[in-house]
Length: 228
Length: 228
Image (cartoon, rainbow over the protein chains, first blue to last red):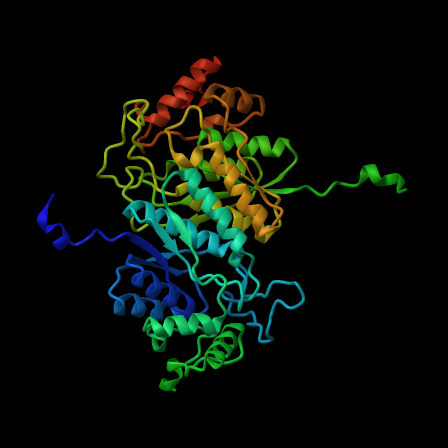
């Protein structure tokens, strides 16, 4: 037996983190780091109506000391208000109240993001893909629900890659996510949640409202507001 | 009861067809058309080492009278010989004999293609996505197996879109595909299978060999060879 075995640095498991630049995905990044994963961030430039969250995502990856890749995609059929600047971002919470999906919904977006993450994970030999999906304080998107992730993991088992998709925030309230992220020292001051791309967050869109409600309920001051 | 009901043109179900420009996907396109689907072709420009199959795919969509969309993707981590021109395309059939995947394998490629197709299908209200995957005369890629498609359809059921992925060639031999496609008048002369991008097919790569074997076993002359 090797006497110096304890001196050996253990090989860290690798994980791909889907990083949007918002609250949830940055919390997930810091959570995965705490779990001992060597994290590789995956950022998407999908022709968003503004680049603020992209800038935030890159900053967050860098400050956390994790490498990142940016993938550019363009959906020629997409009509979501998150992409089309001529469309209004809904401002009534919850935007999905009448059983309808809000205009911010992009069909199959998370499925596309995850499929790229699976490809990336397979190419670097990662054992997990982390996503900040949340099915409590959310806009009702079908690709944020637990059943969907269970089914995706079945696909992965059938591909035989040994890879798993993990969505640790799925059943947490926004305030719970913020408490967790604050404990993990997630640099929330660098995150961007607003669907609009103005100088400061609009405070009116779904995403701003969930964020404000989350910090309020957690009894924590939103550090990104200090800058204003 | 409306007497003229039989004069009414029935509303055609829509389908998205993943069209590569090769034998299998073009057969699937003509099969779906025969089944009465209004077909929308989806073509990928994924930085292939040559554009021959892309040109073929566009021609096939046009000649079949179906609209098409081209999606550009670039995988910054991809090292497949299908993309990297410095890598050799394997020429020994079957390339996966030793239980290893051939260098032509692109991690998660079909998952990525299907995720875009799901998004497209959802946006146009299509009820099916057709893919020409085949698990008999193939290179051993894990995303060509029946189990994988069953699992993907479970994901779709959980998304609640009413969409289904169909891989009608999954269990057919290449010769069976060719017999089917010939009966459906698939314009095989326009298809391109060779992994190399030379003026004429190399005749040595996996894809050429499967094609040659298929036509030979079907007792049909490959119409694309007339041109040489």
